[in-house]
Picture 1 (tube, rainbow, N blue to C red):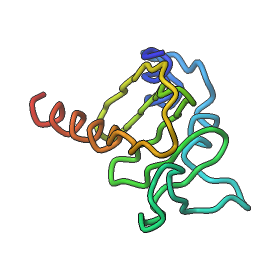
Picture 2 (picture 1 turned 180 degrees about the vertical axis):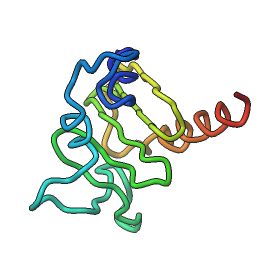
Picture 3 (picture 1 turned 60 degrees about the vertical axis):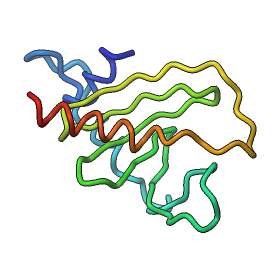
Length: 120
């Protein structure tokens, strides 16, 4: 999963070889016509701002780093941040109650990526 994430982060290329057409990977971060540009994450409280985009199973974080994420029903995440040069795979197998507060994974992923950028 991490290698797939890394390939998507690099525009579909591995080393100097284009595996997935760049247009396919670029389409992940561009909401097609008719999709809402800003939505609220389903587990977010109604007072939370609508600052995400969603289409074709991808959450677009609309952050300064061009980050996006696939999110599975049992807690799995594939977080990709091109400008932070970060891919994080979070495995999960837990069904969360809709009344349980969601873990702040996205802020944690962004902090990890920013920290790694500062230390590299």
